Length: 371
Image (cartoon, rainbow, N blue to C red):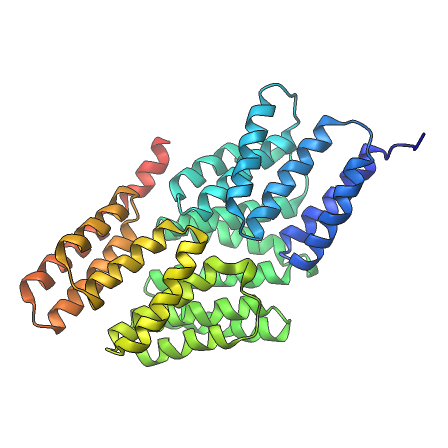
């Protein structure tokens, strides 16, 4: 009879797997998963370790952007959890990973709701890297609802921890980008853009290719906001020119291609813009990214086939999801475009819409408090 593997040994291997996931080392994480699947089959029975495996697997699925599979695992865990005694760590992971799932689906308020539930178990988690990761993700979620000071506070807590650990350079770089994004929104434009340029340089130096891509993308967003469209176009093209497999980062590349199409439309380079628009639309359909399907439809109804009724319907879709930043941003784009076309009545309508939506942004914090 074959001797079973001790569950404690498998748990240690799961810790190594999760560590590679936290560092976003996809290659190592994939290799670990293959090895651990064999270990699970040979392990002595231990329901908590099996639950731990499923939780880490749900997180792995998120990192490789297979979100529906992650959601299915978390739903199964919810059903199991009702009949299983679990420790604080597993409860923390359950709520934390649910928050991550909601964040990836751009349901930022629901994500924060889950993070707050996870936070009730955080003091029982001795690993300070786990604390750093928690603050990092909360910083991202608060940025998603334009709560810049909350976002900065959590980003600074996270980076303070990561700086003490040499193996988390990528997280330090990501947090610098989060800080830069908040600075830009707070009108500290020069400081933010300088930090993005620093991020690009550091990423290149440390071989963090995907973060280098993100650095150029975010710098492009800054230039687009400042209406320096040629510079924005160059940044997005540079991001796409950097050699990196897009397979596990489809959502990010969808965003870059959407922005490149949008900038080209604003520059009246419609034919080239249509090419990137179609590429982005195909990718949105492939990934099931509903928000970007809506945003692409809005571009279509502004620049390609102007249609006030359909444009309003798509903006209403974003309103229902309380994505006020996107509504304000896209309505302002519509206003500028129609003004340029001397369609002043439409321009005024969408400029007003942009201002009204911007005024809704502070109410998102009230929504968080209600949950």
